[in-house]
Amino acid sequence: MPDSRMTNKNGMVSKIQTRIRTDLFKNNYDLVGKELGRGKFAVVKKCIEKTTGKEYAAKFLRKRRKGEDCRMDIIHEIAVLESAKSNPFVVSLHEVYETTTEIILVLECAAGGEIFNQCVADNDEAFTEQDVIRLARQILMGVACLHRNNVVHLDLKPQNILLTSSRPLGDIRIVDFGLSRCMDNIKELREILGTPEYVAPEVLNYEPISTATDMWSIGVLTYVMLTGESPFLGSDKQETFLNISQINVDYSQDVFEGVSSLAIDFIKSLLQKNPRKRATAEECLKHPWLSGHPHSHLHSSHLSSLDEPETPEESDPEPESPASTPELVIMASYTLCSSQREIKPGRGTFTFDEPFHTHPEIKQELIC
Ligand SMILES: Nc1ncnc2c1ncn2[C@@H]1O[C@H](COP(=O)(O)OP(=O)(O)OP(=O)(O)O)[C@@H](O)[C@H]1O
Image (tube, rainbow, N blue to C red; front, side, top):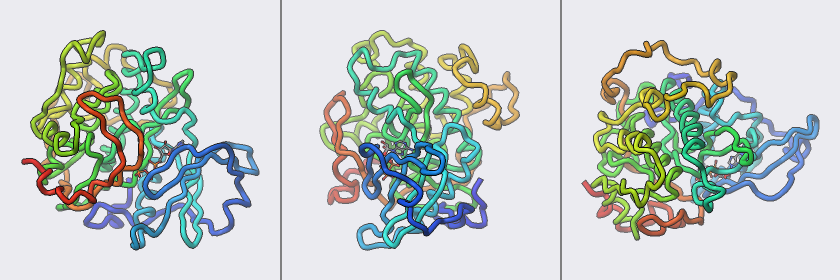
């Protein structure tokens, strides 16, 4: 867990353990192949460490963004990655370099790419329900571990869940902690974060957010993985926000053809407007859809390092009340929609091409 004394009132951590190297990255690594991906202020490239021959992903983050020094945002991202070092489902951080303009995070390379690609793939490449069960369990184990450490990711979406390999289907790695927050000692923080299709109703309503906010996104993510469709996607952001605020979700057989009713029940347990009624990550892992064959989908090394809490299996607690954990109210900083790609249309097509905050109609879009 990040050192709480170093967490500011915005949930940002300012102290890291990793030594920041100032020697030349290029002296120690060769860049190979094409780009692995890019975001608004970062580009990710495959590289090989010269001394070991090992493959990594180098994330080049610009320190100046829109005329502002964002170095501390990157330090926070590093701190959260450090705090998740023992979490096998979070991408691991190998080294950090700094130049006058950039910070370079040398990360474990998740060679299978984004699960996004398989969510929008044609039938023979798309996930089966069994695949989704295995991957959803891993996502939940990773997120449960983050939540136990009071870290909320706040941007869980198919572009931020990577695979160690795509064929055969490997294990998941959670990436991009740029919007994450550490909830230690937080009284109240007001920001808007997240990506339109995946943001929870409480974010749109300027209500307190908590670990339950990530659980909403996992509900959306599971829907997309099983159906290839985005449940709240409208023809524009206004419609998307209205769909979210009205929980306007299509659970019909047309969309869920061949998918079990347990899977639908699982999604419903997460797409609840009231965050207090939403299942927690630990509760999700006990849902019959995922708990049919406990642990059979996981490598044994993962199980030992996850540091599970000592909750009796038979207990069936009430959904965790966000009031029992420090609250985070998200209101004023906006997501950077990174990708130019489209997800397969459900209700309509949405391109991640514009930052949230460039929309003059943002206030009208916040539907209460
Ligand atoms: N460790 C990794 N291994 C392989 N590919 C990666 C890795 N990290 C990131 N990528 C690829 O690069 C893309 C962008 O990375 P990331 O989301 O971390 O950047 P970002 O600039 O913080 O994004 P955003 O603008 O969405 O916040 C990812 O969606 C993924 O496709």
